[in-house]
Length: 183
Picture 1 (tube, rainbow, N blue to C red):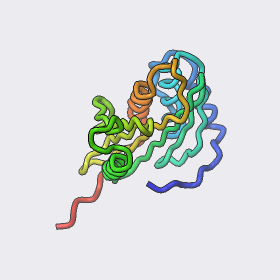
Picture 2: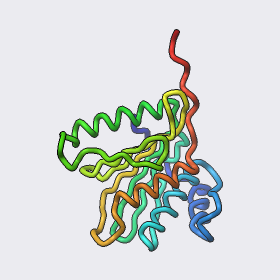
Picture 3: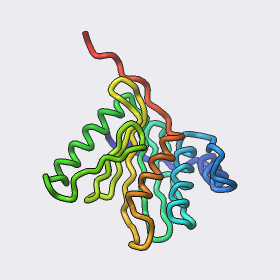
Picture 4: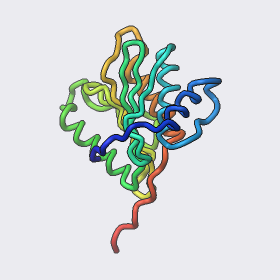
């Protein structure tokens, strides 16, 4: 999907992120979609790393939310798109990554990730998890979790990415259902 210009986070988004970091991890985040999604990513990253993490909203468009989490030597970037074509975005992205990094018999082949969205794949060579909550007939969200830095002593990047994606799906906005195919 195409990149969009990132606007500065509003005071409301920053406030919602600060509030979401407090208290038990059981209350559902409230507020604008970017605040909810980035707060969920923040809590999951902090849980995975067992320590402090900062999260920055780099794009707050409700249909194209981007967050960057950093802490403990880790940098994760998440992208959440609410799109009626979320399943097609997942399918296209996984096909391209598999062609680029998944030659037969090599350890770079994508791994299927159960329990995250409708379908999800982990690309070890890219340290990227790609997932969707959509189907061909139901709109949803398309989520990627990319790991830019990772210390060897922390939880595996795969396990952390899986946890972050699952939390994001619990609060992510969904795209509308796709139009029926032409008859």
